[in-house]
Image (cartoon, rainbow, N blue to C red; front, top):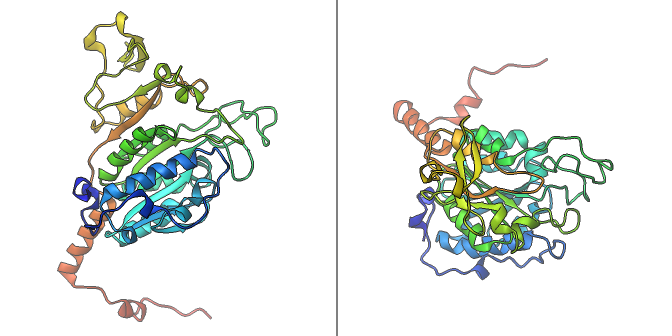
Length: 350
């Protein structure tokens, strides 16, 4: 239970036995039939009992978009906030209330367009919150415009002859912002999704999980190569800390460094076993994890890593803030808000 999640050390535990049903609200779930959000919701509801935390000590904060309806369907506290600002609101909550487990639900448009600034600063500060970024590579709520992660040349209602925007790689952005935990998973792989949730919940600081999520109305089949049983093993690189990166249906492909130091895919039969990279998610230098984000081919999804790319230890912002306040109070005593407001540092405007 919660003793397995160090990031929840200040969150009250519960001895009550909980199930997924306890985390289902009485609200009718309203997404398009076949939307990948249903699978993610079920996986999260099924995982929540593992935390061993009272529902009133769990909060889901969202922005605007299809994914942002999430708080309505969780029988916890929640806030459906404003476009792109969920990380900022969650930061205030997490830093002021260490007794809460704070989760952010956002989408590729919400997080990487209007919310890009808030996302990168939450990541660099390492606030103790968990961010679930649903990436369907399209604007779904506003009916199918291209998003910051849509492939170059994507034909949509707002780009009828093809998008000219070079897309963001969300995990590259996160690692560039010095995120301490970065992972990727897929909506339809419940076991893998929950394993990543488990690792994120154990992490102290900001954890970003990119979830490839299908929009069957405006971008159906965007991740089909990673879902189809005939192709998924050949296109997907499943990362396991401490294990050699070998993949493919026949385990015939691997990741090595080329002569320029870049991570590339090679045939196992054509390299020395010592050349094959052993995955280390705990490397403090972000260069390795960044290299992993650049292996895949965005259009075909060939050689796409999933799992935890980076998981390093760095004090969370909220813990450092509490320690700083304790030092000030020990030295100068508690502050006096009324004295501050009525003090000499005021002025009149005529």
